[in-house]
Image (cartoon, rainbow, N blue to C red; front, side):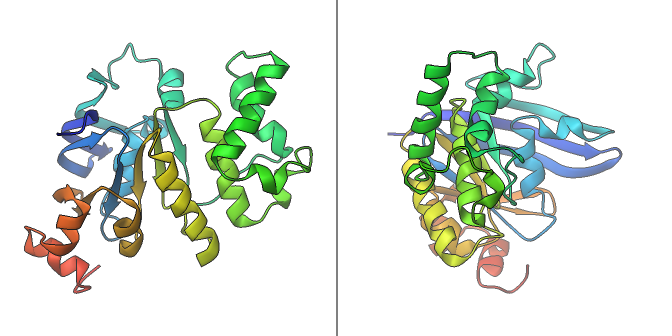
Length: 253
């Protein structure tokens, strides 16, 4: 049975002023699956996922063509509520970026800026999200200490928990383990596998072994084009395209 499509990109082109960074991208991202984007640096992976919650809107002179549908509705429609879109499609960046606030205030921030004032509800959501990110036991006695005191791996799990607290439907991970040690990387990978039970996940990674470990589907990109997209097992064992095979075997990239 074919899984349900959560996000569908159709004939997507993206431009930095006159430079075309993405060329005719067509891809379906499935609900409650992990989709990995792989490819050499500069191939358009991060540019593409930033289109999925309109982060690229912040770049002067940038514009997108084509359609990106979230549950069948085009997110680039002028009527789209971008604040609501970014609640639905959360993002975790390459480098952990906790706010210079307490752990608790980091977590509560997303709720309070959305107008929630019920302290009991906020506390419940904070604890629930920290538990989902497998961080609560580490910080339950330090919630009012600075988040900057946490280790790199803990900071990244805090950023994931901070994303979860506003109840997204999709989580975008842009190289989430690039700055982490192997033990922290393993914890993040285990967490991603747990989170896909509830969330649709897209992960950009340079680490092909990581893509093979955590993803259900893998897209290989090169110079702004989507070269091949299929189930991860097929991509890594019987790729259709010669370029995919050469990249996976280390001949370039």
